[in-house]
Length: 116
Image (cartoon, rainbow, N blue to C red; front, side, top):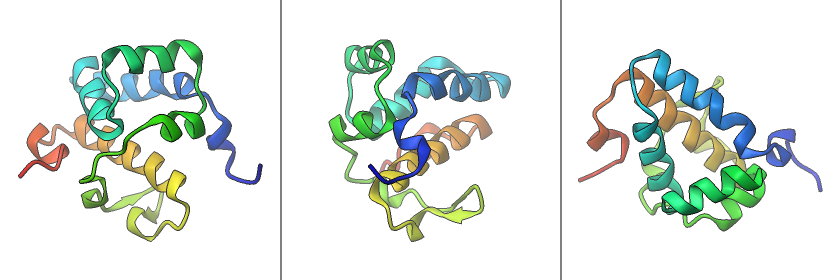
């Protein structure tokens, strides 16, 4: 399988870093889980199962039903414009990174979730 090494990384290995980032900025696990569930379509049980099973990012997003408003997530992550990424899996991972950043910065949840 050709691809970036993050694709084979367990989602559960990165989740604690996401959590630490939002908590360090005064936000909660519930807010983090809300954006993850919004993006992926997973319910609480499915998210917990993926964490417990140490699902790779590739399998995590393969099982996800990515929200139809996800393409509204734009901007720069790690010096790269999300909307210019060619690889769909990398774009989905960067969507998640961007949502975590927005939660950590305290952006209103209605804006983070791209609500009308």
